[in-house]
Image 1 (cartoon, rainbow, N blue to C red):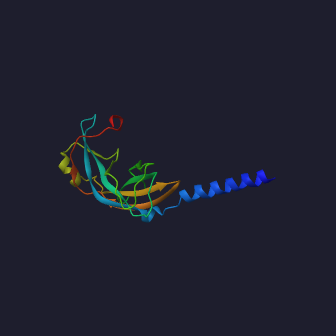
Image 2 (cartoon, helix red, strand yellow):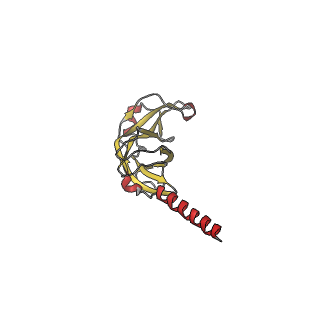
Image 3 (cartoon, one colour):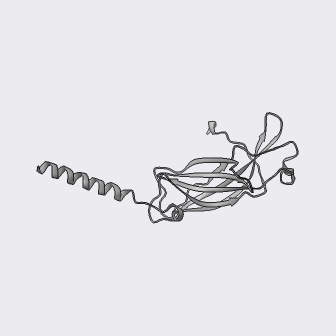
Length: 170
């Protein structure tokens, strides 16, 4: 009978130690979005010869908690203003298993929608086009099955130039 009590006691101690290491963190206050910049990325020319511009947002995550944050995903929804559904959705690992120390900031995260605007006019005419609608990026932090809003940012009306990136080459 004493072996049973010993085993039950060992399981209880293990459960307490494990739960202490998994302290819940309020993501809404722990994840601070900083260094935000945005615009419409020049994604090149489509197969049909049209210029393609996609909403893009760049930001850092600052750990405002008093404990290390780890295993946090970011969900970014791109919404055209006044529309009923998102234009595009991205889910990326923002903070890996090694974590982000209290007071530290992540490297910049660059997130670009896969859908956007195509036009046969010059790129600079995008914002004057009759079918152009402003886009807002809605950011959510996700950890352990919980998801919380952490920011909402209107995409700036500016063209971002650069070399398009392709996920398969990264």
